Each structure stands twice: as structure tokens, then as C-alpha cells.
Image 1 (cartoon, rainbow, N blue to C red):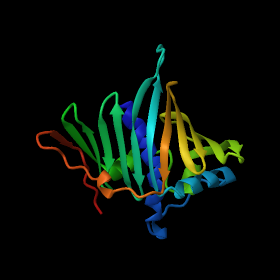
Image 2 (cartoon, helix red, strand yellow):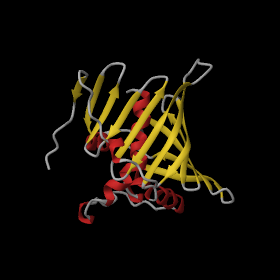
Image 3 (cartoon, rainbow, N blue to C red):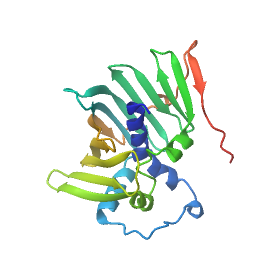
Image 4 (cartoon, helix red, strand yellow):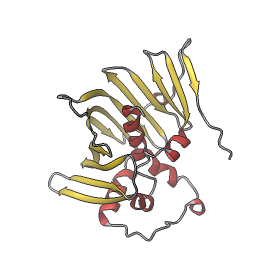
Length: 231
């Protein structure tokens, strides 16, 4: 799987899935299969996620590879609007748009003149990258969450998340300052490391809904892999 798409899917899980379960009727929610204690650390992280209604920022992503002196760097913009709208826009070293409109996930590569369409629900629900889920109960069933650094003076928190089951990631670290996610660090099971640093962050501001609507340009190839989900 493309490393960029891997990280993007993780972020969609972080910001958006909290809103998805809140929109479902209480009767539809599944109880925990395992009796797990919800710690204060887990409650704090959950509260931060739930308080993120919109989020926009510039990002710098660095992927560290073995036998390489410098990381592979990607620059771009990241937008979120709950429920279920996202835009991950890279500008350097190549242009790519990954847009979620609430139903479909569009991945557009201008250089290839190609767009791939996926069912958004299927990507977020079935992907092994769904590291953070929609409620604090689901979160603690998937991860052991530890607040490893708490600087009250600077209103800064550093969380460590370790999967309870084997998956693609060994650990995830999330740095939050003044209620805003500032940095994300991923360690995968093969020893690969990825960091994403955010700047120019705007929390809960107004975002034009057109940012989350993709209209394919004329003449491009369209690969539609959406699945039909019976309601």
C-alpha cells in the first residue's frame, strides 16, 4: 500500500471516526466484548478528538527509510470537517488530492491524469489502518493508551498508543498542544518511521464545503472501485 495513503487513512480515522458513531442510534452500538478499564489518559485523548469539529493545517511528512541519509519529505495541506469530510492535498514533491465527500473517497493524481474512487465507509471500516475508532470504548479496546508526557504549563500532552492486536503499526505517538494535534509519529512493524508535523493550525474555523467536493476534469481516467453496501 502506498505510504502516503497509509498515513492519510490513519488521519481520517483519528479525526473523523469519532463523529461517525455519535450519529448512530444508541441501540446500534456494540458493547465491548472485553471488560477494559477506561483510564483517565484514554478519556483525555477522546475528549480532544471529540472537540475537534473542523481542522485545517499545513503539514510536513517525513518517511525515514533504511540505508538513507535523508527522509522522503512531502508537503501539503490537511482539512477536516465533521462529519466525514476530509481533504489531504500534497504540493511537493508531487501533487495529489485525497478527498472524502461523506460517501466516496477520491484519490486524484494530476500527473497520471487519473482518479480512483472508493467507498468511504468501506475504507474507514475495513482498513487495517483504522487505528482510532469512534468512541472511547472502542478506542481502549483497540489500544493501550498512555499519557507519557504532560506539560500543564504549556498545555501540551504526548500520548502513546500501542495496538492490542498485531497489525501494521507497532506504536503511534500523538503530540497535542492547546487542544490541537501538532505532530504524529508512527512506527510500523517493519521498523519504518513516519512523522507528520502540522503548522498554521486553525481549529474549529469555517471551511468552504466545496473543498470536499471533487469534480473529475474532462479526459482523465476514472477507476471506480466502490462497493455496493446494502442498507
